[in-house]
Length: 223
Ligand code: VGL
Ligand code: ZN
Image 1 (cartoon, helix red, strand yellow):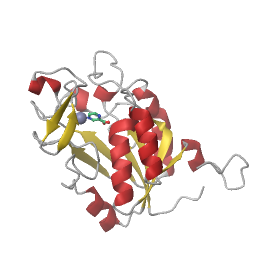
Image 2 (cartoon, helix red, strand yellow; image 1 turned 120 degrees about the vertical axis):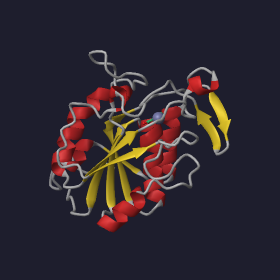
Image 3 (tube, protein in one colour; image 1 turned 60 degrees about the vertical axis):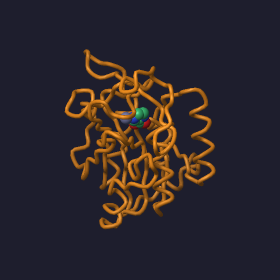
Image 4 (cartoon, protein in one colour; image 1 turned 90 degrees about the horizontal axis):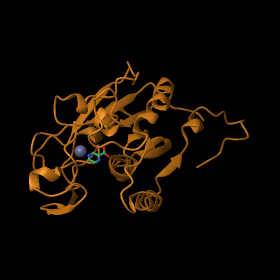
């Protein structure tokens, strides 16, 4: 696998609240095995010169919180911009739950992009908020930096990784999801829908090891 100077690793929302609680920290919206992506992402980051992290970053009474609407988590509401799944309160700005996982070792990360910081609109995607229109600025940043191919990893496969990958592809970036460096929330049907959506948009799914396999390696060639 020949990596290029114009490649970037996009690490989505590897935050305490998306990982199983550890020592009383995080776990508000724990993705099963969410913390297991950390060592593999650390290894991936060593291979890529350019690494960008995202951070889900919500104010109190955010539109995506079930409590804001006096409803139960995982119910859905009709927001002005379309259906919005409701979640337990998570990634509140400036809390330990919103902090990046302490075991991430990516000293050379170039940008930490916060998203979901507006009370009345959620943002699964690192590129566009949930109205599929309001930009986060990431596409402009990547273009101005000359970064063209994106390897996506992090949490959660069936929400923020999914929508970031599809928007990245639609905005003209070559976009590859490193499947085993992600984990899913796994609501009913969400993983199957994600697989189908990625396939439909021709977003490829590779394994992390594809990035360190040599072209001559007979095991190389997936995806
Ligand atoms: C996410 C649900 C709510 C994610 C963020 O990072 O996938 N999921 N907020
Ligand atoms: Zn969120």
